[in-house]
Length: 194
Ligand SMILES: Nc1ncnc2c1ncn2[C@@H]1O[C@H](COP(=O)(O)OP(=O)(O)O)[C@@H](O)[C@H]1O
Ligand SMILES: [Mg+2]
Image 1 (cartoon, rainbow, N blue to C red):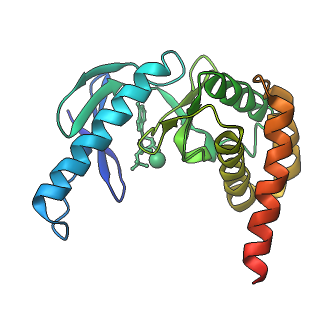
Image 2 (cartoon, helix red, strand yellow):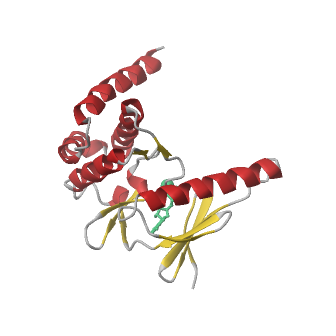
């Protein structure tokens, strides 16, 4: 029996027995040719990134033009549990570091896009905005997005979560990336001022 798990701006997530289908929906306000191309491109790109992130991301079962069948991760969305289990943030940091060592920038690193599976492993999903980069700047921006997400959704435990994350985050160039993050955040603050 199929069950709709989520419906976002772009995609619908349907749970089938042991798998999940992420299908990108047609947008009537976009010109059909452009819309088709965009959906195909994003689906293909997301599937490729899921493949590169084997073990951390759900296993890809099959890919069509506008849909990815993937492993169902049985567990909890981290957004719903992080405030009660702050030490998960250390694992999130560790996995983020491993991802950055593979030169993958997630692009939407929020706690809605992370699951804790039944073995207490942190699993990342939603690689629709991900890209390959070895740039310190891009990795710092990834961290900035995570921090902003924590600031808005987990503000009660913001600094504990960030400290735990940093403890686990250990990619090469770690210090450079964290240093660059300070610059990225300064830029963000200045933008708000003017
Ligand atoms: N492989 C999966 N296993 C279990 N739940 C999933 C899986 N993929 C997505 N979900 C659920 O669907 C929601 C939306 O998926 P996501 O890929 O983040 O789509 P969107 O691009 O719409 O944000 C997630 O927050 C999660 O609850
Ligand atoms: Mg998402």
